[in-house]
Length: 233
Image 1 (cartoon, rainbow, N blue to C red):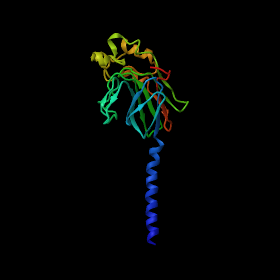
Image 2 (cartoon, rainbow, N blue to C red):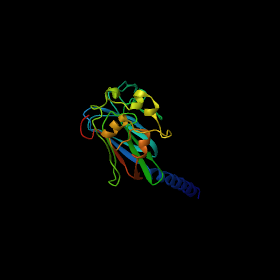
Image 3 (cartoon, rainbow, N blue to C red):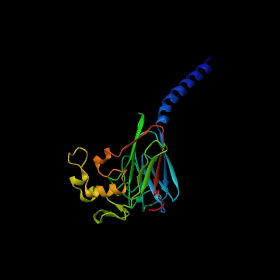
Image 4 (cartoon, helix red, strand yellow):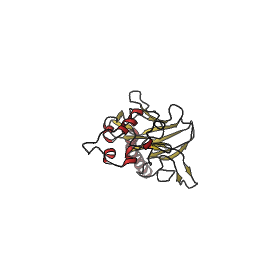
């Protein structure tokens, strides 16, 4: 009878582990990150690390749940140990972005929050500026597709210009007017944030604006992040 007892115990642990694992799968999401630019992109993701994506390539990233960021790094060079620099979006000189460290300005940022509730949140943020056009969308046709494809680099105001991108005004001026957050009562749009907003109406360009440009999508759907959706940079 002993073998049957061991078999029963093994089945019990398998059953329990399956019950634990199923909820995690239910709220996981896959992010298909595609480079449609005519240059190489070093995609960055927290969580997820990093991946070099040549033109036309895709990186499929599985995320279980929680908050995360995805962005493009450009003009990168790394050695065999994964240490180097990027012109835009650099994350501490590492090929594999780690911890909660996010990229250096300027970069266009896709943000998401995967929940154990019924809905996931997602948005495109320009609070770190702009470097690569982007579309962030769900595989569900019922969910909003966020378009950020304006020519913000070519039309960038002189004082916000950066190599390979366009800075957010907070990065340049570092004053409360441009670096305010939602806790400051007079936090409002400026001419510079309105310029960014004009090129990417569905994105948010200053902290309070984020309340109006966060989108919800039912849990269980996957997402697409496309860099240079119009085919060039």
